[in-house]
Image (cartoon, rainbow, N blue to C red; front, side):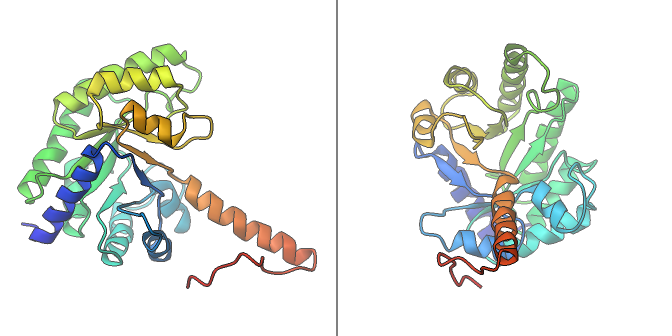
Length: 261
């Protein structure tokens, strides 16, 4: 059974999603990225990025990193902050309920879980199993963010066909008890409106892809959360690469550098 502090952080994270104010989470991948993000005024929760964690250990994305190593990494992040942490657990590494149980054991209070376009009944059973495991661990407010890959698994699909598939899946996940659902994709306003109508305000989460509606507009449309996945790590690595390029030109660190570590 999990201690009460984990359960209370889960309740806090759930409330942040239910608040009409849009929750923004810039994804982290290790302790130093987590502490830097957490120290920025206005940060209310942290989210890990599985792609970024895997890359930091030399693994390709797609459940190639051993689950034990992923859980250890997110556990270190949890231990470095008092903020609620939600973890990207990909498709559950072969056993979603057990993976979530292990994640809760290190203090994680929410997770992304990909459907990977499995048959819908199987994907729904995974949602139900995860929620049951969280309840058994004493974290009834665990924020399962049930993700559908309707758009990202086959980018050649007709967007309206992908949208219809996404709507069917997120409605089924919500009916199974998922408190939030995740549709990573480049979406126009009408698509966002359709998805919010399917599951209700403050239940849909999105990714901050360039070209999507503004954060202010997404808040108006009733979106619960926006995250940035591996893009935050790419921004950091771009800055590192730009430093190397500047050094090769005979320069050095930019005057805007902050002493964060």
